[in-house]
Length: 488
Image (cartoon, rainbow, N blue to C red):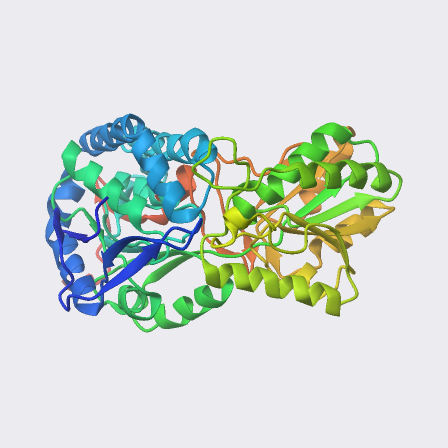
């Protein structure tokens, strides 16, 4: 595993020689000492990206695309290694990193590799005698701050469109889980990306992250993380008037109507909240279930929840691993205590596993609680294997509960009524809605939210627009313009 900064095509030590530990969340052991980027290192990386930008932005779009396609192939070839790195660094079960996360990473790079020479400008029909065309130009050097929950996948979500559009990148992987991003940088160098186009500066938000946001040579910051940090980034970025893209928290509503396919809804609900230990901004964290089917639905869901195999994420039989850090585990457990203060009822889980083999790790049981929709735990993002349950009898009541939070990222519903599906999908306040499924993503489908879930979009053509600026060019072909000042 790589443990140094990646700047200007080389793995290098931090200027000040600082390091930090990245830990295995299964047992708290040290995986590696990682070079800690600080302000001077961000400056070095930005200088390298600035130097590389003219040649990279002028490279034929198809050639940039070919490099992204080669990177996708290299990731496919490295799936076992990358999956194990991701599992050891995040606690995400190996069956998911091998079967979902790494393949999705390759698929994203492959999508934007194909997009590079298909992102077109336009011709505007203006007055006679003029040709007016619009070119999508790259922004320059962009800063990207990646979260700790799906680090390898989010690395591709941010790098892919930025590079395809012709930008150079300074990326800060999370200090909690930096290993897979450093491996992607290593693979990128191996397949021929020019030095300086991709730079990785793992470090802490208060130092490396803050310098990315403040640096006058960085044209845009793309951040995925908490709403509180996102607000701070937006305030700081205003000082240099740099563009900001924020993909922030969520509190996903998952509505089950009385005509739903119960088996599908139970399985989809469990996946929506317990996949990756609930550490997902789009997690189905609020179950809103119709009173007519509540008893049957909850009996089946609680039974399934109690059967989930919690254990060592390196074991291919494990279905749910540890949370990614001790600090985050403690935060989730704090919300369990709040449930009792709010008069909630624990239906499943509610603590840490009793298995001694897991005692050193950051484990929390898959948990379901029933509380009032206005309770803190039903309003705040817990970001763990923690779901609240609410009951409704009418569509209006379901929508009122679903939309009565500050977040607006993802939401879902289960029904066999086609009209209802379209109606509720339209009225849910969310950037993404799933019908008779939950938590589906694809490189071509825009990903992002409204409200305090942020603004801007990952994925698809929208992501290419995030990393480009439209330039209008006017050509006087044969327009005969009268002199505005006849004396001239």
